[in-house]
Length: 111
Image (tube, rainbow, N blue to C red; front, side, top):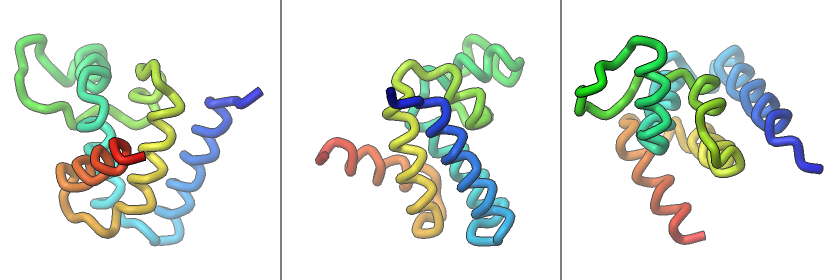
């Protein structure tokens, strides 16, 4: 059986290794988190509400949900892992999280 939690942990380890080995910097790591919040807006809002980082009537896009918390909140774990993997491999090609999220949305729609 395919263990999604184990796959997520492997991907998190690759992200940590990329950062530790300076393939991505702190700004890219932040963009990665924001990108995932933009791809999973409803779930990110729920995480931010639970963590006290958001008011119920806040209309701004979520940007503060940690990747690990967001993964736990998302029902579509396989989709989350796939999009996080795309984001990791594309992160240095985009200086803006919105552009990267749009790229991933376009790629997913065409698969």
